[in-house]
Image (cartoon, protein in one colour):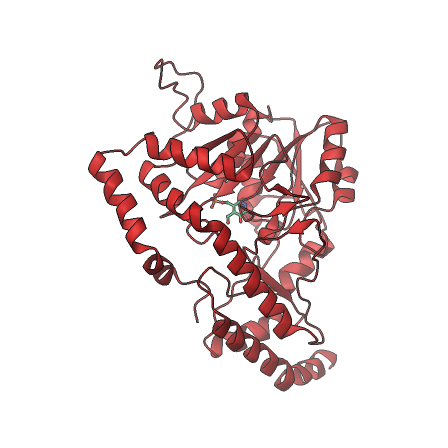
Length: 375
Ligand SMILES: Cc1ncc(COP(=O)(O)O)c(C=O)c1O
């Protein structure tokens, strides 16, 4: 059983996807055409902001957002240690210093740790809404706003998730999204977007994604980048965006089934952090156990593919030259987490098989593992 199934995903909406591609190609609409503008408008409406600017990855959305916030050499930007490396690389590439803090049990930024890490050099904070769960944005915004710190949301994994009724990507100066194929809204390859209510941020991203050029006047306003969301991609994403609410409901149902099936297993921690003010979109369903590696191997042997986000802390990748910030929770998470199959195509039968294998593992192997660990 694959973690996700891109062929089945395509098969289910093939007619509409094929039409979007051939229609766009037949019109010769390859770069900066109506399909891109339509998708940007629909995305902005969906997120609940005034502007969305299509770029070619969440990395670029983050980088451009930081630049728009005026982040540069000598500044510090606070974010979490438990995130994909692109969050931190975007900071490094501005010349600013990434300051990494720990996450809470829900894998998201701890507002107290954020507050404790602020210095006079702190220019921005990047809360990462991991696994499809929004950070505690009211507290984070209170802290950031009172200190004049810009909030740039890494919402790569959280399109459609809400906190207190507001969607990821609508809280900060800007929100940054990924349309990498395996995200909830996945394109044909790399893709991303900046969302914002600030016209200056929207204009900045619109210019720098296209080498700094204002297309109306031909004037170059910045030394920019080649980082546009391609028109064909936008046309396909626009089709898929219409399905997203249904897909998110499906993911939530799959998560509910996993939780029901796995409850009560000793030494297995489930994502039990509901809270009425949160609406999670379940990019990932992540469980935790100290027997992670053995469980993962067992599932693999049974034909169940799982993923680990991420097996070692970023600072242990020596060539990244990051200081070890000593984040205990992040280090433990790296040793213990495992993501179960989760997508719009995951079925209740898939869940039953995975749950059955996990239960089997714990009833047949865990006692042996406990003895081995104690010896
Ligand atoms: C939390 C997080 N931030 C940033 C990114 C980078 O996204 P992209 O691959 O679109 O640059 C990812 C991608 O996996 C991610 O999971």
